[in-house]
Image 1: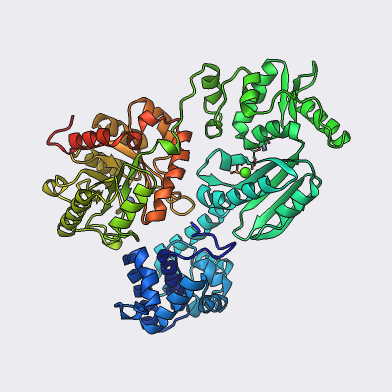
Image 2: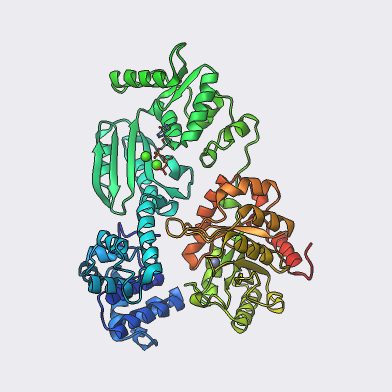
Length: 615
Ligand code: DGT
Ligand code: CA
Ligand code: CA
Ligand code: ZN
């Protein structure tokens, strides 16, 4: 996921953004084979920043006290101050430019770190991904010291995945590009309506390209504005009413400009999905209507819908701006659905998975909304691998208007994530109790853990330790290669544990980066329902796990969902928005979701679970 956008006016940098920059410098220095002490100094500096409070940083810089902190020398302090003041670092720009672009691309291959890339470069002379692919294919990589057959295979797979994944983008990243463009389009004087359509509007977890739709009185200035957005690397097409651009990130975007009276038909068409559109068109035909992106008109007695649409298109082109009959009384999508005897179908449901039948029967669900959330579970702090302190996380949650926040730092077996042992967990519980007692804001913090499910299905903490907590998220973080039967049995064994409140990220997938581990979702869902265990909808934009495609059926059978941001800093709490998209795509209503419930109800439910028996 890309970090905060760099375009536009400088608006201040957070300590975590500075830490990211220091990590990047360390990686680049390592790639260049710089002194390991220097590399480690940057890594240590980054970790030091991650552990302090956001509010401390400005003071430390102003009073030149950064240098006095363990792990931050004078050179580093200077760079941090420069980044903090300007958002830029000359040193980093030069460093990036001094590394071959092919080596930077290799950093994006999973399993390839700077040390290995340096070895490949120096010992095999590899400079590009294509050369690396060739060297893997003919066995030169496997023959290298420290690599071997297995790691050669993994690198090759990583390169292939990167190509396949490179074609799509996380919804979160795509939305960050799209939102200011829609706002900018709406602000243009020639524009009367502007929306994003396509998979972005449907809230799909990944997006192929952006689709903007505009109704405008004049085309030229709108096209000019669109084609000159910051970050546009190439204008790939520009016609009378349509333009396509490619951004530096590789993301592409289409803009279509239509007359106002066609807007709603085009919006519906370009929102899709294709399956939904096909079904809608069939429904229209059955009612003697022909539906297309240009309008809804009586179907001609003869010919197919396609023939009719082509004819309409020809008419449209001939009549230069003046549209064919499109039913001018239809202005909104609700009216368009109404014309076909349907309740209005929210974009997230338009996947051709039964939404039209439900709309006809008046059985569309009242989908959960962001405003329904009253809190969130499964959040990390600086105690494990988070980058905001407990106090910062609680204050940020209170500022969102939430009634409660669940903390769940990693457990001891997740040593790579600085997991807590029993002693540190006890200290954190005491800290949370003190915070709740002091009540600096009207927010209740729940004590929890993201407890590792060990390879055999046992939990990482014993029962007495788990009994000190308000809730337990159980997650798999190791032995991903187990076969499906073993993994499924492992997870189910954890769900049978009476202290487990909810299951974390069912499949461990990282969208566009790491495949899910093998697990039988149906069996896990059955077990969760049987044992009264919640399954989380991990709302991190790169997880969105359990997948929305499972939720409708599972919730109908009684499974409860928790939309969990898995936030590692205060900004990460906002990920619940991505979780809401996925929940809506899974037909979930507020009643299906734990964290729409008021504090008292949630506290009672957790107490029931934490009590000596299951209900
Ligand atoms: P993406 O970009 O791959 O994430 O997915 P979409 O859904 O945004 O697809 P895109 O950008 O190719 O087209 C936007 C919408 O336009 C799509 O959801 C439905 C509509 N559309 C495009 N091509 C066709 C088509 O051949 N038939 C039908 N029925 N609809 C189409
Ligand atoms: Ca699209
Ligand atoms: Ca498109
Ligand atoms: Zn986890």
